[in-house]
Image 1 (cartoon, rainbow, N blue to C red):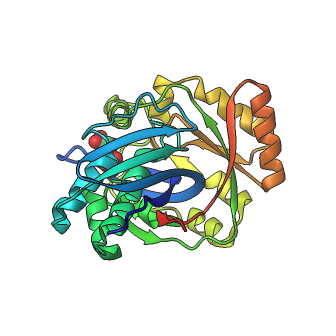
Image 2 (cartoon, protein in one colour):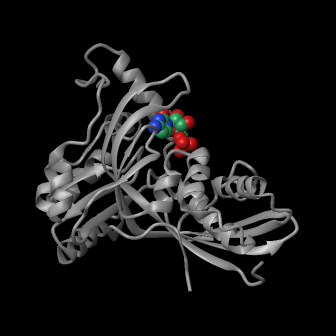
Length: 306
Ligand code: C5P
């Protein structure tokens, strides 16, 4: 067992495409999605301990993060200990760079990082396949945070197929002070779909990621990807947060090629042509008083840092 803290870094994600199918009896919706891991990170430090304890700090507002068993990283550590028969605890320190309740999978990244960190700390060597299984039990987005890069997600979003993506994509994120609840946004979409004519698209019976999305990623072509960006949850997020529309409109007015709500929101992701354009869009958005961040993707999934 290691005696020094193990440091694992895991990325936040953007759903470049998010098609939402019908709701199933377990409360989950079937998805056809494309995730891209971006350069906004959660850093998790795991130290030996007899008990399971947690502290959280970071660059973003962490006041809403639970420190008990509601925390996904804590659940991840306990699940791994139970599965691998480890008779020890861990102290986890989480340094958050991904906005809390922002639609970028920050909590899922914490869980993925905690799995990898505890696996290294305890020397359990579960291997990628079993870690993926544990990740999927913790939450739909956790396997992708392990995997990173660019990947197609089906099922609940946890069945992953790597997607080819050439080069780098530059994104400007517009952060919100107030988060959104993922279950509430999915619930809002169900309500809208139940109202005749409220949204054009009833849940599609068969879900597929459009070829245009995959081709644009494969070609590394942001100009082709921009018009193909789509998020079925966007309309539901905008019901609660009409202010997000102006961030999307301003981003495009300032030169972004296109934009979407990230996951269940409220973070906005604006796709730019290159780093220079992204910096310009970021600066102009900041001039309007918004919190804007230039990031790029794809980046690797949860990994031990040297
Ligand atoms: O799996 P996770 O805990 O991240 O999901 C949070 C919530 O998001 C679920 O409880 C569910 O309400 C909603 N969700 C869904 N369909 C999915 C993924 C998430 O309805 N495929």
